[in-house]
Length: 356
Image (cartoon, rainbow, N blue to C red; front, side):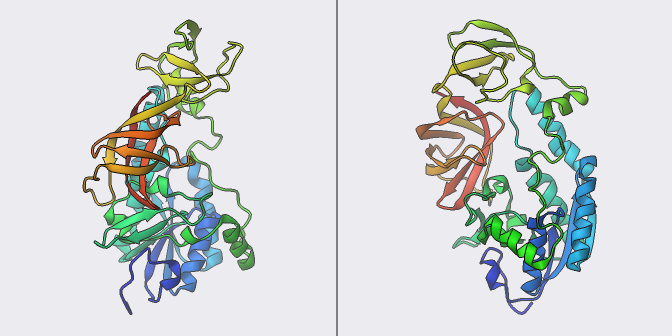
């Protein structure tokens, strides 16, 4: 290396020629990431991960994009790891009435684990992806995920569980871009993926029908009854895997007024609430993690309870409880609460329970 490079200092400061392994999907984001790194002088190798049988098209698209960009592309098979760490827990959690986010789990345990292992085998120091986020090091040299410049595209929430083994090697060039700018770059380069649609949230369920997917695996959600806001039994529902906290449409309930799912109870019953009663003032978290594994000090932080949610101010007790300055709408057990200090991710955990 001509000099020491610290990921996160900004894509425009790359002044060394070095090797980088780019996670590719065949889409516009990872393809433009490759081009940016090439223009910065990096020797780029692509890697596409076969997570499940549903990813065969992505594998072929990534290989085609790599060929157009003039880089080698290796195929990493992570199907067994993905089944164990992502698909099976996803199905089990839905059957218990939780609302898991598979990307949050996949990123540290499968996607970046596979990329890191492949990079080590190839003697490649750096990793890169097309995520819209940034990596910055603090005054102690600890690397953190930070929000992207584009609030509309920011994916920092999805990356909060990454540790220093990945963050210290990670380059995220798209953290400074808007999506329209990325597509413009792709068009200017004549990339065939320039108009490709954005990837799906649940990549292993192409049609988005997760209840049918789960049931096809021989599983079923807990049975139970709908409970009206006043406690009246409104009859049986279709199984908890068909519902999520905060849901209003598709309930098949006629009360003459809008109602929401307030909570899915342990016994499988679903408690409904009138509009306005789906707000909660405190959360208990489990599986709390920080970028360096150190405890997070008690204090006030900005918290996102969903990827697309606006941050809400909350007091963290230093262990597992968040108390919000203003109640938040429909926090769903199984989703994550991610804590920020300014633009910097400082920790997060899975929502275990909500309090009124």
